Image (tube, rainbow over all chains, first blue to last red; front, side):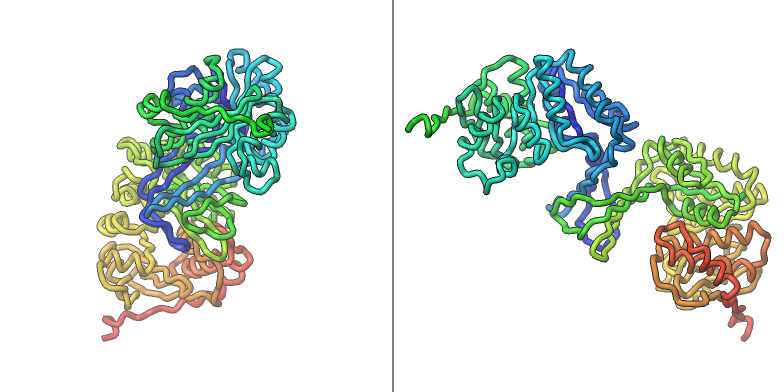
Length: 308
Length: 308
């Protein structure tokens, strides 16, 4: 059972309209609404792969019920007064996003969330914690959950940004999955040019694997002192939202099956690319994934410092 | 007890941001959310006046609970899968509105809503039906509710537009409160120039009073074969949203107290103007209302046809 945690879930609301014009009244034609958040998206992809998975996190009176209805096994007890919404308007080829901050979680939410994760860790083979942290929860929340899993002998994959990523990098021990921008912010450098070197440095600091996602270019991974570059077999055009979550799902999938890193990376890259073909975040084009998984090129990169 | 019915309630969500830019991601700073809809706004104003009032309509699992928490007596049973939202972004002096259509009501919702209104009519002195009709409910819904009230001897005030207004005008017997644009659409004329003549014509057709609201210019009313123009005592600048609902509240308030039309109209005009001073729809500046109510000029208009 793969356990995914979403510390700041959201209901994704999509409004279809002709064109968004500031200052005007718009009568929306269609409303599409569904429970979301990065950990939820990871669980959706794993569910599509028929991999036993449960998505958990702090919910409200409706969130878990709606997510369960959509076929994702989940446990989102009402720990928040209300789950925030992300409103997206789509029209005239333009996408405009309005991200609510969400209500501030009360101090006991942290303890309740730790208990929730502790309960589900008993049956977990991998823990994935993805996305931001609800206001009121500490930035160390994902790192704390990761430490609990490590004490239970469960491997951890973290897809974080900003302060929660920094906290997790300090604690170490978990697979970190930043993209290039997140890695730059973490290392407080200008945009990272030498991704393999930066990934090696981060992995040396955490004592754990690092997977840097590079969008259409695939990824760079460092694990067990080795470094690989994995590239998708073809250029894919579509909706990149949720591609990072599908990549994280691929890493978790491989770890749950006890695969080696060179075996894991094709799943991660093929799922990321197959997500671009799917309409909604958290979905993948399964046929494309199956076609591509054996075609992903995984190339070992030799360290320059070792070569000298 | 004044009974207000909202056949298409909405949760009004206001996002404060720097500036709405199509195509961009916006992290919203503050979210303000409250149950709304025109009949709900009428009930809010009457509640501010300490006039016994109950707001009813088709709700969902949350709507009535939230409205009750805000201090408005209400009965919104869960007859809809979900109450629609109206999202408004406010920033850089600009207001942009996104109005959801709302889910389609099932066929039994009409019967349930009629039963709900029937129950509350027993204690009602006036019925007010305001606003649009939820998808799935018939355009004749307000006219049907008005007919029920009339059979029970309860006077009715209708603030409607488009097809529901046309249906109510055909049935007759209820006070209609169109604004100039709604009156033009109903009469299928070019913009109405001679409002008193149009109001007289409509009143002759319905056999009931007609109050045409004219924004900052006050209103024109026809009742019992007489016609009045009522003008606010000073020009008011502010937020006109909800001013029409406050005017309807004034008419209902006067009818509930058994006042004559020349006595009712100052309440209607003073409340409409006092609503412009208040920040939110459904609120009035009570001090301004009390100051203005005795200063509203109500002038009888003699019919030109009678003069000839």
